[in-house]
Length: 93
Image (cartoon, rainbow, N blue to C red):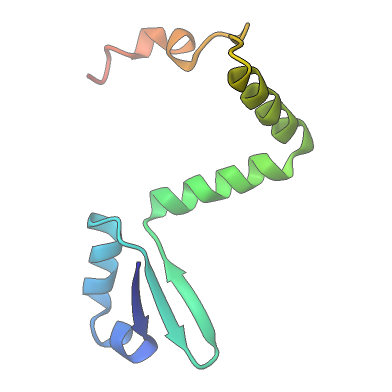
């Protein structure tokens, strides 16, 4: 993670954004009033989805149960993502 003062970031904002997007390099922009973080949109979307799933008690419990089964060496009775979307696998490769 790169750290920038607000003056540094504003002086070269295009480069700071490019590093975040193309190099997957998060940036912390620090000012007297606080710090903000710049992350690529895909990473942000992924974090939001993770937070959404974790805030839903049913989804979170299912996730924990899946981890417990995996840790115990169990196999899920549910189909894998690959099995569900088998018809799309060759479409984009």
